[in-house]
Length: 282
Picture (cartoon, rainbow, N blue to C red):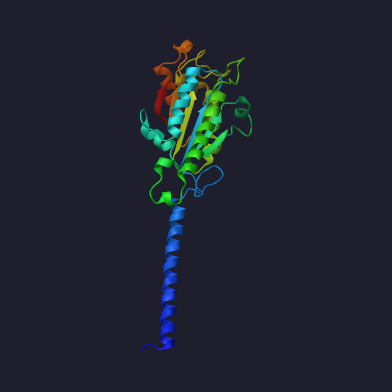
């Protein structure tokens, strides 16, 4: 028969083992929480460990666009932000709009392009975990309703900015469109100062018609060699970014907007160490 001292020792061992078991369970849940919850994010909704990709979106607001153009662009961004990647260029958009990709929205403004500080993003945001992508383990810690609200807020913000910026021409009197200068300026902005080890993507929403005092696709040429002969001093490095053009066709510019025009931009982005991988015509 066990003595009182032995019984107490046995009870102490049981208590210690019980405490250790509870500690292991709690620690396991804590690890799962931080691995699977969506709370460990900064003020831009990006992971504290940093975004896994960077996507620059350039909106060319130099000339007013039609209601059809604006609706088409809004529809594209709406589906990409919500994680609907069916249709054209699925692979590019899955990566450019991935959960932990940081989206930076740039709007063409001459005042910033020509300033010492350069262009700055109007918006800078990560999409975050989408409700439909929540795993069984994550569902223990993550409120899908809150995620839905966060996602709807991001979609609404982009929707509002696209509507406002594309419906507000930057230079209604002169109708200049220094698109090349804008792209070079973005190459020198915060976008390329981010983690160089992560993939970088660029989306340009524009009619892609360069129109400035120095060079014009309408007045001069859409032959890249013609531009290069006079502007070899222009430098920029997009560090192997992959580029998608949302190419907005204008009825009055059929002579300018053609395959040769797209080739100009393929050469230009190649000059800046980037590559066009997708063109969506609208």
